[in-house]
Image (cartoon, rainbow, N blue to C red):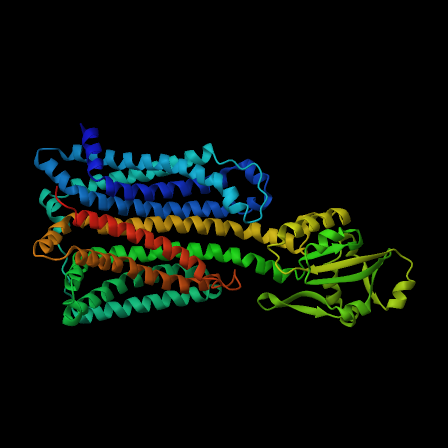
Length: 600
C-alpha cells in the first residue's frame, strides 16, 4: 500500500519531480565522469601528462558532491512543501506518523536512485564523447581510455545512495514533527513584510560593507593567502544575504508606494506576488546568487585557462619551430608552413666549442624570453652578435636552442672569414615563426618531433625550447581546469535553475486562486502572462546580476595564474546567459500552465 501511495504521489507531481530529476541526473552524470577519469588506472599510467592532473578531477568530484548535497536537501524541501498537504490529509484519516515517514522515505529514495542510475548511464555517454569533443581539441593524444569504469560506477552509486538516505531521513523527520494544522496552512501563510526603515538601512550598509571586504580579500590573495579565501567566502555569503534582505524589501516597498509605477497595468499585483513570503525568497535568492557565481566562475576560469595556454607557451618559447641541422629537414614541409620569420644561423662544432657567425646575429638578432619581477614577460629580448659575444647570460639564451649534446660546450662568435677557416662540418640552426601557431600545430609538431629524434637523445619532456612541446606541457597542466570548469559550470547552473524553479513552482498551486479571480473580473490573459514574465524575470535577474558582480571581482584571485583572467570574458558570459535564459523560459512556461490552466 505504501508503495502504491508513493507512486501515486510521484505521478501527481510528475512535472515537479521531473525538474528535480533532471538536476540530479546531470549531477550524478558529471560526478561519474570525474570519477571515471580519476580512477581509470590504465588510462592515467599510459598518459603521463594527464596523470599529473588527477587531483583536479578528484577536487571537482568533492566540490560537486558538497554542492549536490546542499542541492538535494534544498530541492527536497520544496517537494515536501508541495506534498505536505497530502500527508496532512493522510494523518487526518488516521495514518500513523511512522507510516507517513516510510512513505516519504520511499518517495525520496526511489526518485534519487532512479536519477543516479540514469545519470550514470548519461555519464558514460558523456565520458565516451570526451575524447572527440574536448580532449582532441586540447591536442592531447589519449590511449587506453574507457568510458565504463566499474570503480567509478560503484563510487557514484554509493555516494548518491548515502546522500538520498540522509535526505530521506531529513524529509521524514521534518514532516512528522509538524502539527496537522501547520502542514495545511504553512504554504499559504505570508511572511510579514514591514520592517523599520532604520533597520533596513543598517542591513544594507552591513551587506555592502561585507561584500566590499570580501572583494578586497580576493583582490590580493598573494598577501592574505588561505585566510583571504576563508574570509572572502564568509563575508560574501553574509553580504549577499543582507543585501537581498534589505535592498529587495526596500525596492519593492518603494515601487509599491509609487502610484505612477504600481498602478500601471498589473504592476501592483506583480509587486505583491514578489512580496508574498519574502523571507523565503531572500534565502533562496541568496543561494541562487552564490550558485550563479560558482557556475559562471567555473565556466569563465575554465575557458580562461584554455586561452592562457598558447600565451604562456609563446612567452617562454619565442620561436614556433627550432630546426637543428636544418639542412636535413624536409624543405617542402617547412615551406608549407608559410613562415613569417625564417632565420638561419651557421654553425661549426669542435670538441670543445660551437662557433657562430657574429654578422648573422647582428643582421638578425636572436629572440630570447624576457623576465621581469612577475616572471616571463610577453615581450622578447633582441640579442645581437656583439651582445652574445660579450654577455654570458645571452650565450645561455642561445644554448637553449642547441641540442643537449652541444650545451656543455663553449659558444664562440667569430667573423665570417674566421668562421670559414675553421676545419669542421658546417651545419645550420633554423628558427621559424608562423602566422597562426594553433592552426599550424599539427605540422609544427611533426617537424619538431622529427628534429628531436634525429638530433638528440634528450626526451621530449626535457625540451622547453620547442613551442609545441612547451604548449603540450602547459596544456597537460591546465586543460584539466578547463575540463572541470566547463562541466562544473553546467552542473551548478542545472542546480541553480532547478532551485529557482522549485521555489517558484512550489507556490504556483496557491497562486491559482488569485489568477482565477483576476480572470473573472475581466483581466486579459495577455496581461496575466506579462505579469508572470516580469515576476519570474525579477527572480532570475536579481541573483544573476549579483552573481556576475561576484565573478568580476573573484577573477582577481587568478591573476597569479593567468596573464589576463578577463580576456575574452564575453564568451563564457554569453554561453551562460543563453543557458540561463532557456531555464527562465522553461520556468515561465511551467508556471503559466499551472496558474492559467483551463478547467475541463
